[in-house]
Length: 234
Image (cartoon, rainbow, N blue to C red; front, side):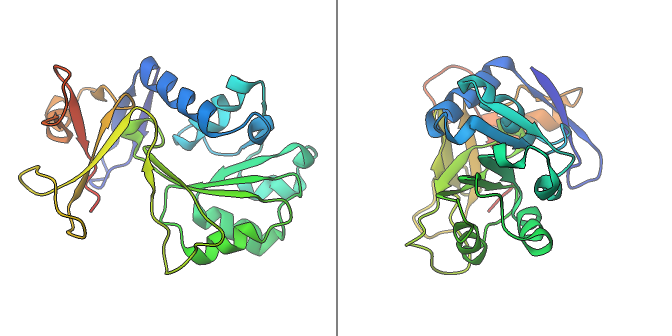
């Protein structure tokens, strides 16, 4: 379907190969998780070099919605079509800067998706304080798993502490917290996050060694050749 490069911790770009079936599975989840009214006008402000753009450009089209194009999320208040935007999909730091520098969201915005960075409870409260916002979602996922792997609808009444959990796996996705022996850890014990399911990338283009290192056999799967992606996140 597409090849997307990530910078990686080493500074050497990695080309992530995402297959059509993975995008189809992701969009099927999006169609079930968001209503047609929510996706009637999705702000498409993320560069196509980043995978948040996959949601912004294609998810609304699955329900007959529209992409409202913008150079970046900070341009939202100046758009001629800003009143058509019903969903904003961006990273927490950009969302915070949007509110700090530009004021309230248009009243047409009902849903705010925040992903790519840890979400604080304080920012979630600020999002819910916007004139029209009725749903705030916290989403997590590496490029290697087709944009989003887990999601959580943040409860306005249940916000406590400093950060918001990343939630549960999206449809057709499995998430494990494993130790160094790739065994599940008890509740409350730190471990590395591994992801499996239909969203997994084929691997890294022309990087077979790195592909074998990060995409490992799935000891919990029933399907031959099933793999897990090692996120490196603890």
